[in-house]
Length: 332
Image (cartoon, rainbow, N blue to C red; front, side):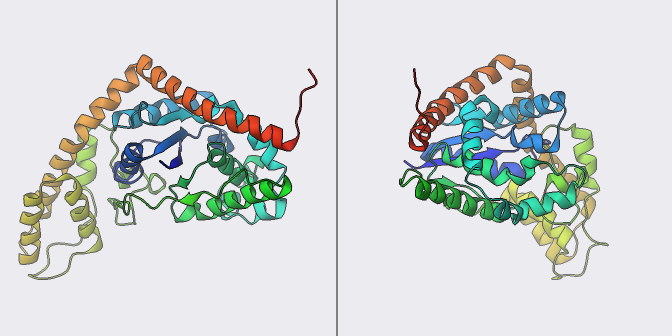
């Protein structure tokens, strides 16, 4: 059984794109591998969140993932800051990371452009902390998107450099996770690409919003200037809405509107109303479970405690062995 490590950013609320992407992947992975899923609250400090925002975001993310089926009995679902070994190993690995390679990191270059008034040391050493998140649990595989490939490559670099420096083969090279097939890319509602938190509220379908607002958002979604003649291709906006419909609606419903679109008789108002009905039907039970977990602090505490214990068992073993390799020895 392979070990898999993946992080969860404690920012914003989960949307449909997250659910059919990372969360569905988590649900598959926890059935087949030994998984460590962590809520990256230490990483989030690079943006200087207020204490209330930080806690509330972690609370929200933990509740959402439990509601969607991530099972603390099947995996280690934990809060990053609950595992002190991560911060200590981060200190040691920073000694083996060089300024030049960190400054060349694509994520660092992006961040210094996007937050010019907050270029902190944590942004520079972000790849080191990501590497530690992975190496502290001796991950075999890491699910990464294209924007994270460089960080995985840097993780391998740090692992190999540690091995070379201390004449050991302690850390193995983690590989990109390739199981479970391709992730579904859910398009946004504004025809501006995939559904993403960064693209704004009007573009996303979240699980924790009121039904009235959700329906209004879908009814305002981009299609085109009006139905075209028979056999005409769909516009990008209309195709996006059909793509969402295939995820939440019955196949017969999708087929019905496909025929109408090909015949040039589709009424966009009816189409969007049906899509809104089906989205609400899909989202409602998950929204209800999120509400349950957000209110049930004892269930959240139990899940976080189970995850903390699993993660600490793994991380403390690694830290003890790393300290011995480095040469830290007690005199008492």
